Amino acid sequence: MAEDSLTILGFWGSPFVLRVKWALELKGVQYQYVEEDFKNKSDMLLQYNPVYKKVPVLVHDGKSISESLVILEYIDEIWKQNPLLPHDPYERAKARFWAKFADEKCVPAFIATFSKIGEEQQEAAQEARENLKILESGLEGRRYLEVKI
Image 1 (cartoon, helix red, strand yellow):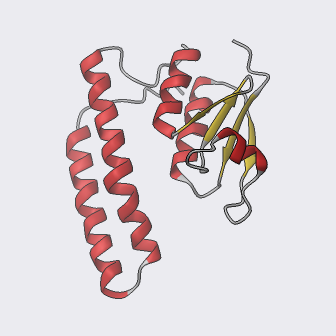
Image 2 (tube, rainbow, N blue to C red):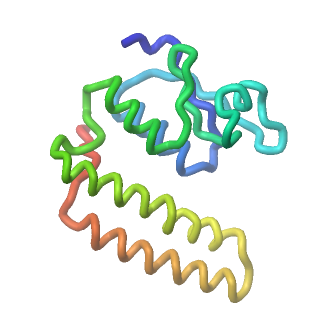
Image 3 (cartoon, rainbow, N blue to C red):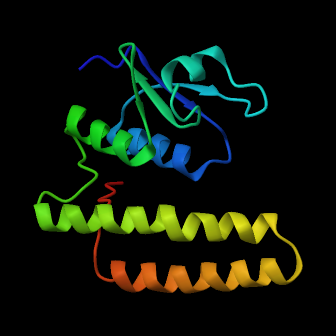
């Protein structure tokens, strides 16, 4: 599969964009990165993600894919080397579950920890710690990303 026209539209501080960049790097796939400005969204972003108008967006051969977990599955299906997810369907489903948990529970609590002040910040930090404990216990003994160095 040609890698000539592979672009990520992203924002430097987005954990969702980092997830996509890391996946491509683990696979050894070259890509172009385009930094987006949230205050002045590019025509390219609006063209390739007209529904949500947010990053990350992967543009491969002129076709766009949005939402980081969907992008990861696409990357894993297109570039077979260095699989991101387990081969076993049950283990793959569990990996998706924990990724969704991280997206819906951990990331919002982390963001609130840095964007709130006072008591709200303390509550967000406590929620983040609790969610990380849950995530850690759920992932115990499992290796979902097999990194070969």
